[in-house]
Image (cartoon, rainbow over all chains, first blue to last red):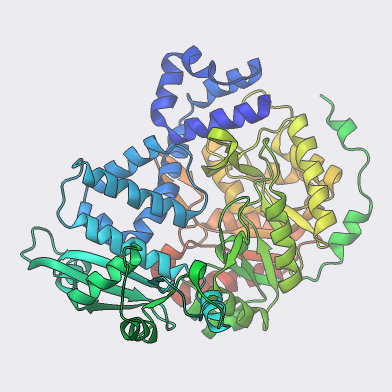
Length: 259
Length: 310
């Protein structure tokens, strides 16, 4: 148990410069949290006095921020300097870093969206950009071949009672003209932006080898949004077939009827 | 201190096992900047080392179909594997974790072996997984060195034996880079490495850039360190570059190798009779600095060192 506790304490310290400072200032308050041998206690006290501990803490932050920067580059640009502040709040909230970087990025994205909804982050473009990047990542890391094979071998080709978005399709609602917004962000133009405000929908898919992004008619966007949220009660059969034919929706697995 | 007791029984078949591995030459650790290089400049490589953790998405412990393949990455790997031997350099075993060993990870590595038949495989002498809240594993965010203590040596040796019985090719452990030192350790690092190879039968991946980094930061003689290590156990050498962060030199894989790393490489190559490969590693973000010419220059220099003995 002592080695396990020692490793837990070491990893907690690497993750938190504040905890290192507390250990320096008031060792008992930190050491009492773990079941440590006397030698382990000496080691930890010695550890936080070494200059290398700040390198460990820096590398921890570097390793944890890299996937966020890499997979949410536009979110990073939209939030600007507050991005790192939000990441630090996220790490404070979720000390248990997820070893699967895609899940870690998803969790950070949802954390940001919650903070925006609580008005703890004020940025009019952030939600749509976060959702866009999360959707992009989901598709990028989806098991495209597996899904296509499953859909192609008849498992889900039957007539069902409920539609859902195709597993290789995502729908993202924008409140600002999306093509211009994305272009401004890619060009790293500083805010504010003067953009047309309305409800817009982008449809993203990896039905082909490459990610496709297209703006769709608002009426179609609203229909697909209702399908995505399982809020659809009726849709004429010919419309269902048209959406299936277009690769946008499939019959949901639970209700699919084998042909 | 009972290190000597731990060294019995040794595994006599291991020296011959290491000496029977094909001597490959010079290789490169794969990173996402390299697909084009592998298409155009494969001629300068004798093998490719891969981090298999990058080629499968780990959905997490307990998930069905936990390791999901990244198809485009594996397609590239298949193309390369048809032309050059593949070596596996894992980062996810976390062999030093006290809490438990990830058997599902090991099983996955065994399946990767079945697919690519790497000639040897390796991981790091550190831990990255710890018990998190509610007993779930969580990632320490950094490969943290293990203390060089007797109980840790015994634990890791047991695990190495399990790995060796699961995957029938030599398994190597890489010497750590460390920015802090644990006080009151039972053994020095060379004693620990020697004890581990004897007790467990593993080989060593001697990362001379890690060694250079440690020697520079902690002010010791890297050559004297090498003189204390049983270099017969070294199967692979890593070379890399680094830079300074927060007042210390770091193993950041930042471009070309510094001159002292080449000196250390020459020293190891001249003494490591079972050496099978020299692997250059750099971080993908430094590709614009190195470019094709820079990578080739590092590989050619490594090859000249290799050729001085082989």
